[in-house]
Amino acid sequence: MKLGNNLFQARKKVGLSQEMVAEKLGVSRQTISKWETDETLPDIYQSKKLAKLYNLTLDELIEFDVELKEIEQVIKNTNEEKEAKINWTKMWGKKYPVLNTYQEEVDTKKYANELRNLLEDLQKEYGYNELDSLLVLKDILGHCWKKGK
Image (cartoon, rainbow, N blue to C red; front, side):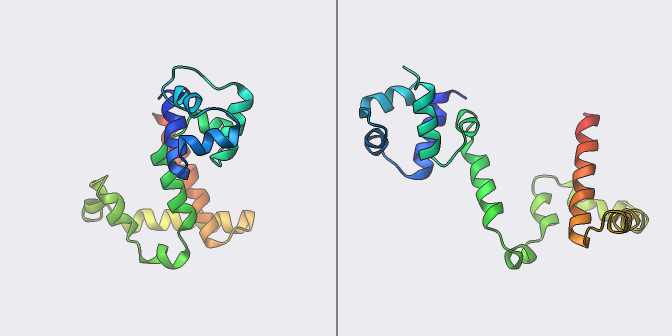
């Protein structure tokens, strides 16, 4: 993705017009347009101002992904009450169908017992509560999976 498109997407995400951004930065609307169409590039100082205006770090602005930002916002705004209503297996099963069928094939009790032991070990050894132990174990598993790829 090019920087111009990132600038455009970030500006749209915060609901500002090119005119509004231009006014805040002390440049012309045409300058904003040229940045967004990759005709020219903002200098580092203007880039930092843009990032601040769009509530992003400079790195986030350079790598801006509107879908990722929307997912992050949903996660940030999800409270425990909403979370309890979500059937995560069913939701992820739409993307990964094996989640809808594995329970018929896999000896889940066997793996559940082993995982329960690992969760208890994390709680005892590090003093984590049940949820933190689950999150740590999930994260460790994710890292193992990524290393194997």
